[in-house]
Length: 219
Image (cartoon, rainbow, N blue to C red):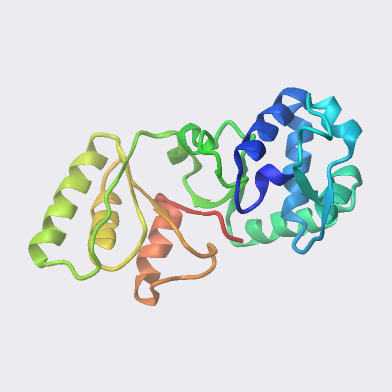
């Protein structure tokens, strides 16, 4: 459980890979969903027999897991909260992509602190498309916006999905242009899918959610 916390030590990263070797993807998925359902916890040491099972020992490994998460993993108490969160995403015409899913972007999965899940709305297939990020200043010049739009549309016309952040200026110019072509666009949000920010991007947000893809790690 430590490996899915906010910070990762070298020891935590090692534990993560030992977990993946010791347990099936279904068991890892269950652990991921239990984390979705958990919010506040206290810490407790990892049981010695658990550390021995994954190749470590209590004397060598000082990793800690959070008591609430550990209890959730060992029981089925996580199911109801996880189901509610999943259904909430579906009500917003969204979906959830787990770290264990084949649709989870491979380059993102390789990061040591990759999100354990992604909330999405729109064309799920874009997660596996070729991608290029186009980002820039909010206070751009007209020439800068035109350049961003030109390159973004050309990339999308060639089948490359343009990734940006929906901010004013360059980001929005890139999204608008890429939406016109087959490669379309992916907007990575710093808030939940149901939050439109900035507010003046409501129409663009809705169009990306239909023919592009909205992505967030936040519920």
